[in-house]
Length: 103
Image (cartoon, rainbow, N blue to C red; front, side, top):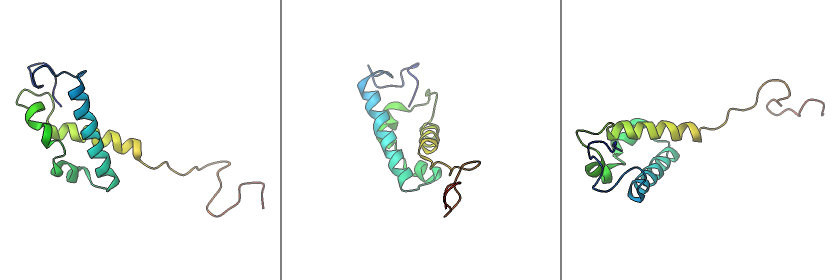
């Protein structure tokens, strides 16, 4: 959750390190689960889904706070999981209607 400059990561851990990747996957999965439960961003922040990593990755010199990290991931995942809008316009069948040209 923090930039590598300034030593915010645990010693020897950087963005390409397996421990960092594992943290990202775990937090992503937690946020995806929260989205499935229809939790709001504020509820997700209050749940402190990054708490297991805050001590190691978030500090006074971090370029991003845990809340901002969660917010960015939440918004990104929410945009990817949003249901597609129904088709509209020419050729789109209306509700309960057969496609054009069929009876």
